[in-house]
Length: 105
Image 1: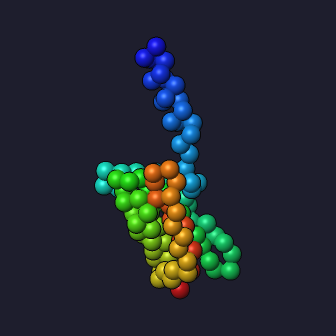
Image 2: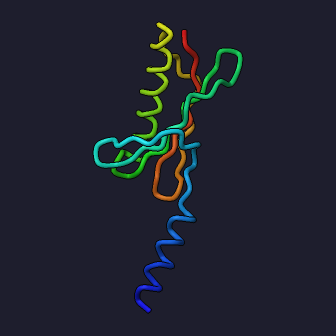
């Protein structure tokens, strides 16, 4: 009976725990995980960086910081600087989520 409860709990946790962002790659940040989307081209020279960060990776502030790192890296690969246009922060279960819209100037 005890094993049945454990199996059911693990199954429920794995099926109900989805990412709030498209998980193109996962990284360890400190002792927590971040789930990162590839940079999305929104058209007209605008892009979006999206990151979901576990509590041990800084939750909302961590997600915002890692989205900025991803945006800065994307622009620097084009020998340009990043200009942040908008940042939306939210929560998904216990994780923090950041969607950052930016331009490379």
